[in-house]
Amino acid sequence: MRTSIILTFLIMLMIGCSERKEGSTNLQGTWNAKWKTLPSSFGGISEITSFEMNGNFIFKDDSLTVIANGYPGCVFGVDTIQHTQLWDLTNDSLHLISENNIRGISYKIESMDDRTVELKLMEDIFLTLSR
View 1 (tube, rainbow, N blue to C red):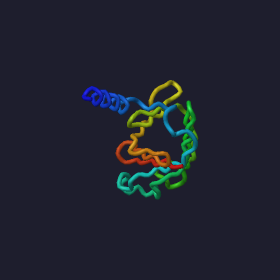
View 2: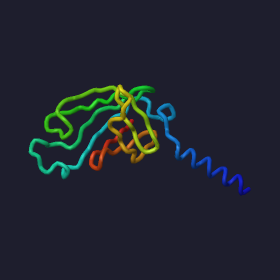
View 3: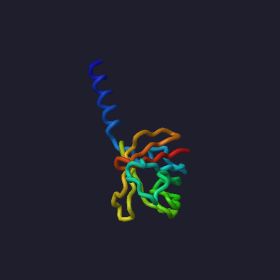
């Protein structure tokens, strides 16, 4: 009995500590994206009138396309951009990877389920993905 309890604990520990690879997640497909930040992080810059931006994340097995819809007054930028890159997922982070296989932006996963993913970049940029 004691051996089976220890074995069960070790298996659960190994599952909890292992990396989640892109093929084992439910991120595949198109997600609506909303970036937000706190106005207090930008100290009253008069040109900035909005602290949110919408877009999409399109996950495929081996690539991620990020579309960010900027506009005048947006803290994140005035232009709409679209960029495709590699990605991977660990227990606590979503990593965007360059063509040279170098990790770039890494979002900390705050919560994740089949319909919503809450991510955080640094201490004051929040990204919500929703289906």
